[in-house]
Amino acid sequence: MIINILGAGTWGTTIGCLIAKNNPNYKINIWQRNQSKSQMISSSRQHENLPNHRMPENINFTSNFNNLDGESLTIIAVPTSAVSNILSSYSFTKKTKFIIACKGFDITSGWLPSQLLEVKYKVLAENISILSGPNHAEEIIDNKPSAAVIASTNEKLAKDLQKLFFHRNFRVYTSSDVMGVQVGAAVKNVIAIASGLCVGLELGDNAQAALVSRGMNELATLKNLYRINIKSLYGLSGLGDLIATCYSKHSRNRKLGYLIGKGKTLHESKKEVGMVSEGVNTCKILYDISTEHKLNMPICNEVYNILFSNTNPKESIYNLMTRSLKIEN
Image (cartoon, rainbow, N blue to C red; front, side):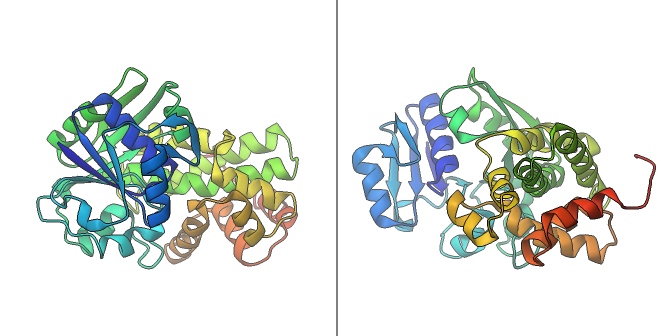
């Protein structure tokens, strides 16, 4: 069996290693945009961000789409902002099955990745699945126990992929709530930026815990708009991912918020993080969504104000703390 992975970042590479080790007879093709980096990984069998791990021999790295089998199972592991551009160059068929392993919204259309595939690229819903959960690549590749969820409206596809990924240190659940799994995974990145701001501003554990729990409430605010099962938001791709991203040292979004809390600009913070923080684009989309639909998402809106309206983080904290008094739920 041949599997294509679009994206050779730490996540795409880790997914490739997980599948390759579970299935030594499979051939894994990982596409990397940069030709020199692709050649370097191929020759050294090491990824620059995963230096202690040798890539299995059944993984092939390439920067040429022609080296990929467009009819094979394809895993999308590039930043969400790059999905549309890359799929425009990728040759696939009506039979190609996709796993979406990125989190966020398409910045141009405001669609979730599955919506982008269905509407713009005419991919059948039955050929789309989502891989999500509290999954830091650095821990999975070290064989530390982790869990994830595979969501698809195609029950057979979900169960087949569950078996593909399952490992004694990587437990996989299935779900039919494609929208719910994506919404939780996207919104938690914005809350993680706010969590990092709390740490950078040294606001204390009470403030961070309050922010994360109220952030969970903002995920739930989107339940009716996307017609999702509230249980999905309290599952691995929602609450689970929210906890991991808000508190982990591996979280890029948390680190971005931390650096801004320490006084750095958005540009400086993005440069220091060095990898894409999906929460930056996501908070733009959420700001527009909450405004258009009159949704109450004060934390996400204040993150937007800090990142794009030059609001002082301390002023945003004041705004959140002095809002009108309410019933909790």
